[in-house]
Length: 163
Image 1 (cartoon, rainbow, N blue to C red):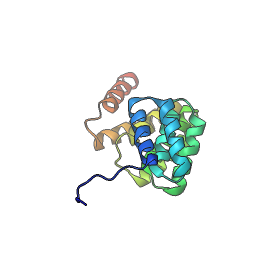
Image 2: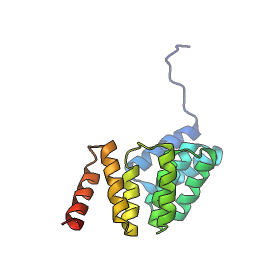
Image 3: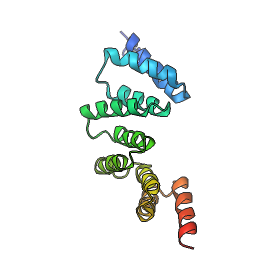
């Protein structure tokens, strides 16, 4: 056997590849169906759980998304992507304190992850905590100076609230 010959993908892994492609293209119903099919055979596959949660969240099924993110976190409590997406789903349901707590947990795991401080700032803004929001935006920009949205948001907040 030639050592560089590609191995054939199993039907289940082809389904996962198709699900990932559907999610990338924004075909959320197909992605959700394909992830669910894959997870029937591989119920603990971390990537599929997180991506299914993401597809559910993006399709407005926030409670179901939270279940998937929590399931992923039960296998890997330090998964930053699952934590960040879990916080977004909580935020979408108006559970701002839970979202903030979850992002603070994510800071312990991946303090320099892009958008983490920005997402935390967004939740603080929704709670009306301007000082905390501005501090998080400044942290995001200290870590990722090219983050245009964080820069625009911080400049707008300064303009509106500091004269």
